[in-house]
Length: 255
Picture (cartoon, rainbow, N blue to C red):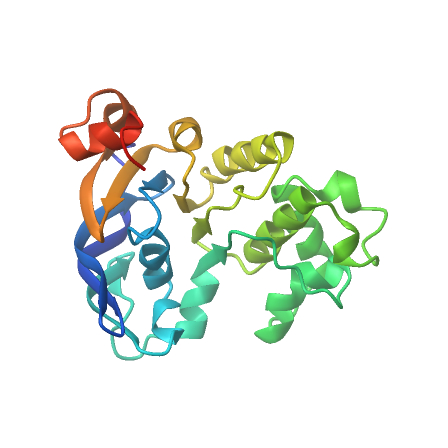
C-alpha cells in the first residue's frame, strides 16, 4: 500500500526523452513519496531504463540524447541553474542490471571508491563496514576485505555494488533490474534488502519480474511504448487495474 502521508521525494512532470530521433519517453508525470518503493514494469523497449536514467541525469551522457520536462527531488528541479550533476548523483544513487565491481580493486576499496573519487574524507573502513552491513554482505566478507571483488559470487558482487552506492549516502536509490542475472537465492536476498532499505531511502526499481514487483513495491508504474499507462498502489495494479493494457500485460496476454 502507498504510504499516502509520506511527503513527495521525487516528482516527475511531463518528462520526454529522446535518443537522436527516437522519442523514448512521452509526457511522463508521476510522484514517488519518501521511503517508498516504486516498481517500473513493462515490456522491453518501453522506456523503463531511460526513465530511471533521467532521474539522476545519466540519460544526458548518451550522445545524441536529450530530454524535456521537470524532475524534482525534495522540490528542487534537477536541471535548475547551479545544480551539480556530480553532487546530484551522490544524492541519487544507481545500481545497474549486471554487477560492475572494479576488477582491480579489493572488496574494501570497491565500497569506498565513490567516497575517494569525490574527495570525501573520514573513517573509510567504518563507512565500508556500515555500508556492507546495510547491504547484508558484511558477515560474508569481513575476513577477506583485501581480496579481489571478483572473488565474490554474482549475487555477492551485486550486493557489493549496492554497498558502494550506499556508501556515498544517497537519499534515492535507482535499481535497474538488479536481480535479473541472479539465481533465486541471491534474488531473495536482494528483495529482502530492498524492503529493509525502504526505511532509510526512496527506491525506484525497474523489473521484468512482475512477482518481484508485487513482493517489494508500494506502488507500480506500467510503461508501454514510452508512455506511462497506469500508476497506482501495487495491489491495485495487479488485482484491479483501471486500464485494459495494464490488465493484458499483468495477466500475460503480451510482454
